[in-house]
Image (tube, rainbow, N blue to C red; front, side):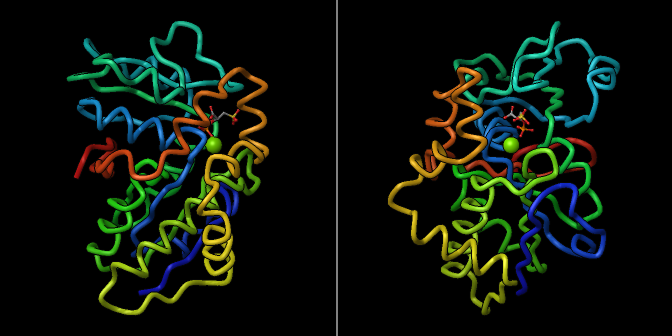
Length: 236
Ligand SMILES: O=C(O)[C@H](CS(=O)(=O)O)OP(=O)(O)O
Ligand SMILES: [Mg+2]
């Protein structure tokens, strides 16, 4: 099984996704939010690229969630902080989500055979689900504004580490995958510190979302593996 790492949404090419299982990774914060929302009983997450689209798609009972410039969008019920999606707020509701990087990466990944949402929060379960799908895998780091984001690379390294442990057949990683695997193994004892020191982590702290970084740094908090079915992510 081949595993390829895509460094950011802007660099994703069709040939890297076709006939594969894509695992979209946006640790800070979109896929962490999606994993949390579905673990907390949301019925599905519809990812859209624009605010207008989100408003147009809203049906009775749906919640609008997401951010622009990191902050909750005017008129939306929810921002992009995973913890907002707890305490029963999303239980039984569909969420229409639009974020700067993560939802865009999910759209780009749609050309793959299977699309999963990965994060530190569901790493083990996600690695296992991806391996069981028996396709070559694209670890699709959403990145930030078309640049590589360290927290996504760290998560790609963790997923690769778990895939190697779980797969019955050998895993053949590309060069970026090997680099991220090494980076993860070097920093496995300080996941939170690595996130805090990353550019996105520092940006989150500046915006007042330091608690989100702490939340998103939890490894294997959830077993839920969001999977795209039609246009909506649900739990497999
Ligand atoms: O809200 C976030 O975490 C980011 C916002 S920004 O790109 O850092 O301004 O969006 P995401 O799509 O979750 O990376
Ligand atoms: Mg991000």
